[in-house]
Image 1 (cartoon, rainbow, N blue to C red):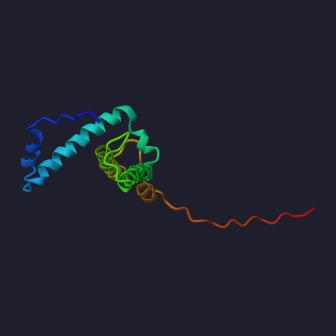
Image 2 (tube, rainbow, N blue to C red):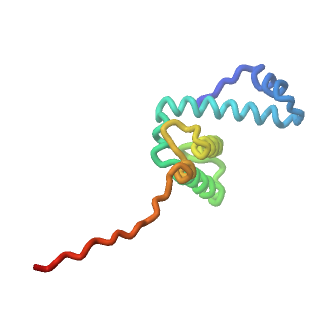
Image 3 (cartoon, rainbow, N blue to C red):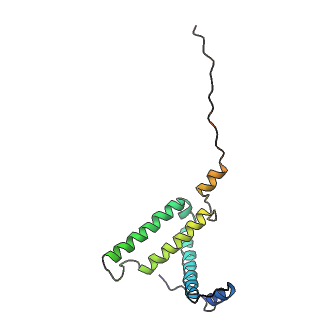
Length: 137
């Protein structure tokens, strides 16, 4: 992954404006901002339909792939991955979790969560129709 550049003063500004008190929150903000830049960069390539097409289940599958990859790397005691860094996998999982929250809350473009559909859909009660008997001539 290319180095993501965050303006030096931005994390501290966010920390102060939110009234945060825990020093570790400052590093958390820096990582979150880097992930936002990564997300935006990837969205330029993929667009929103790569997630809206399969919804939350698709996100679960993608995150599961990343977890399986990490498990494989750690179980084989490899110090680093061959094609993609461990850091990249953790970043992707983090981003997938936020995408899932956006999907479920109805904030992802071109996607309506299943729970919203269930609330908006009126159930039609089955009715029995009695047809008149035909006269056999």
